[in-house]
Image 1 (cartoon, rainbow, N blue to C red):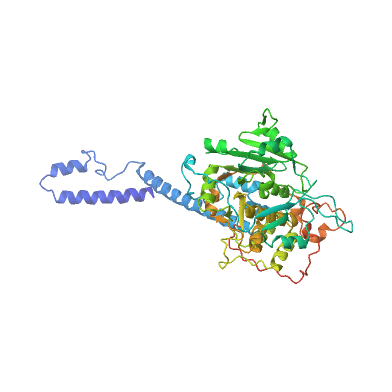
Image 2: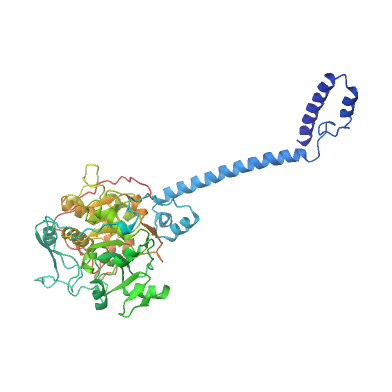
Length: 510
């Protein structure tokens, strides 16, 4: 190839030289000199430097190499993305773990940059928290005037009632009655006498002064507290930052971060005041975490406003800006984000089964009860944006209606599965539009926090159960003894003929 390039260039040079001589016969001496190489021109002799052809070959080869490498890199990215989409639908544990944000596989891929990042959008908040005007007084409900709570169970005549339970032994009749709204209501709402979740008197005294609360919780040592950022001095003075923990988490936190104690024996991690709940009310850590999350108004009864964030999240927006944006600006009393992928609880239930978030047959039973009771899949005809929330952030004013909704929501979590996203839309449906709330876009939800991975994967044996036969036998360790009793109490109707609606997945990533 080298000889061909030289010959081609030489012929062109000779032709050019010949034409030049024929057109300039009046200067033969100069032409002769050029041909003989006296001028020292590159093409005057018709020959090239020995490395010229190799340079041309090397340049062409380098360009081709860059193009091929770019194409291969784009194909690799496409293959990874296609594999990621396929793996989300896979029934194999390893592959489905790629879509599980709590798995090590997901964490590794996210570190390498192979996981699509969350979609964030600007939040229309007041830029300066010091300029936010806090409303005076409380929002009064027109419908619910007086709300009280059942604190003790009535003894069962046949003596079959077990020891006191945190959520109580709510009957099906009591459950049905709790959805019938009246000006004065008394409902189950956890914290039954001797049911567990006891606070230290030191902490009880501290939270009595908390009117504005940012609350979070860590159970079974799955996280460590993450310090909020972008918090104004005004909010630091106004808000109590309360981190609810169990005994296991408290010891784990002490081993991994600095915990200091004030002169009143209060325990702190940075801005967070640790609130210990002694005597965990449930066997399952996920269910224990629903107590401070949903029943914030019961734990902190003096609070007028609260912002709940999950323990694995780092808040990056000032809480006063959050209250102004999601409550005061639109005159709302309850705000929660829309789920990223699902709008129907039946689609969310299907995703929970695929990702082994709870026992599959118990999720099906839970959904059959809801479907029998008239809960239809979400459609654009419904008045709500979605039936499925992203429950990691809940913003509320503790009005009577807001508190009632929280109680009824908790009762469903206590009776059925601890997957609270499956129960939220059902309670909204049963209240028949009386409960007003603001469901904001998921992209704003992603802009409120930084999500950190758990310290370890969260798992329990019940999440892997595939059939009800695995729960058989007295004292079965697979069966929760203090929660989910509605799944084992005979339902007052025949559910055998109930066929759940077909799930059409609207998002392969969900």
